Length: 305
Ligand SMILES: NC(=O)c1ccc[n+]([C@@H]2O[C@H](COP(=O)([O-])OP(=O)(O)OC[C@H]3O[C@@H](n4cnc5c(N)ncnc54)[C@H](OP(=O)(O)O)[C@@H]3O)[C@@H](O)[C@H]2O)c1
Image (cartoon, rainbow, N blue to C red):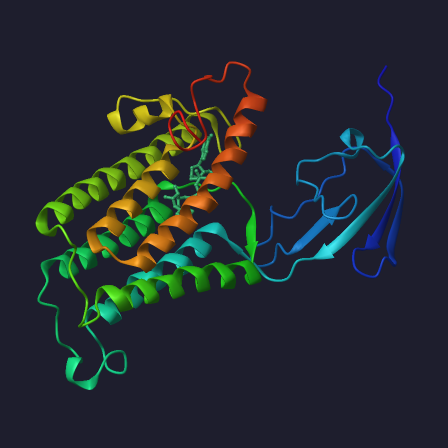
């Protein structure tokens, strides 16, 4: 015969610690229901057991370290936005900002340079590459990715947009500057860098498709570890856990070499640091979750890192 456990739950305001309500004799299956009827903008509440650690929608009281009396903290995280919205905001900015510099609209460079164009073919090529990169990301956001995370707070979106938008303005300013000097080793340098850029973009796209096919096979919350497919670009999964990040960095290294521009190299370096941190986290989660996880795989750089 199954026995029903009843809990007492005290809900406190996360900031003031004042009691908001007290629930007596509730059964273990109580869950947060934040997603079923609310839009992402409204999903702004978070409940935690202690400082910082938030509870998932699917958590049930019986599985939490609370005994039969639970104290839960309720927080308001401010306005929230869905991930598709977040990525659209982040990527549309760089796309248009770069073009303002490329076309040299008024008030950026000297008056005599307004609406002129650079004599160097590498500047045109860089504009095509940059534009294609962000169009690809937008297409992936709309048609490929199926994000399973909840939402992002408005504050974080503003910070991320500032990062992407400011960097694209900074690097576009130098690449399209009338005094820009083309790469030291001329066409050889540009063509090699272009080949690297194109291959890495194709690889990045292929991995995103493979990741989302994996999710399509097992449902939105299913996590399997990804493996190489028939597409040769995905064979990088033999060596790393996050080849999409490896290819992303490769594309930006290619763009840095092609333009020979310091702000691009700095953007690449910061992206590398951020993606390495994420890749290490994902790699650790895979190795912890899957006992048969391939030993050869590193987080982001084959055989090294
Ligand atoms: N230049 C830069 O500074 C920079 C920085 C960050 C990202 N990016 C670019 O943006 C892209 C997306 O970044 P991200 O951090 O969102 O990548 P991500 O965590 O690898 O996620 C990409 C997509 O793949 C899915 N996915 C990941 N692992 C999966 C698994 N084991 N099973 C099923 N689906 C899985 C994700 O779904 P979930 O939502 O369920 O995880 C998401 O839809 C990167 O690949 C990179 O090209 C660039």
